[in-house]
Image 1 (cartoon, rainbow, N blue to C red):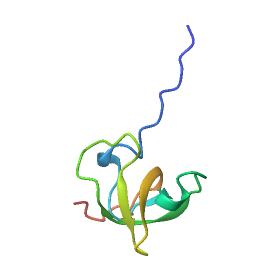
Image 2 (tube, rainbow, N blue to C red; image 1 turned 90 degrees about the vertical axis):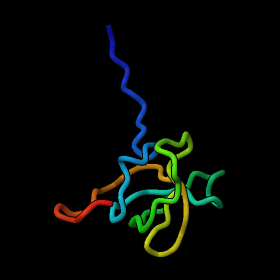
Image 3 (cartoon, rainbow, N blue to C red; image 1 turned 30 degrees about the horizontal axis):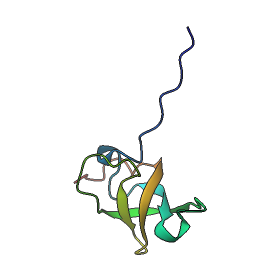
Image 4 (cartoon, rainbow, N blue to C red; image 1 turned 30 degrees about the vertical axis):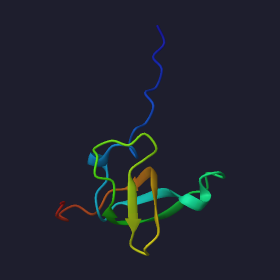
Length: 81
């Protein structure tokens, strides 16, 4: 019996994303191409705990997009909201 890997929901679950995390996002203008933009989360904009297309965030530089993946967590000891 072969086990299939579970599809990742890292960018789709709000609980896995926190301000200060480094993430890859897809900007609205890049949705067709799927081009990723890397940055640090300033603010989480999606209110629900799950979104099928990814949690919407604002990066430190002001760009807004949906999380495609979490690259790195914020440094240990940094308070989480």
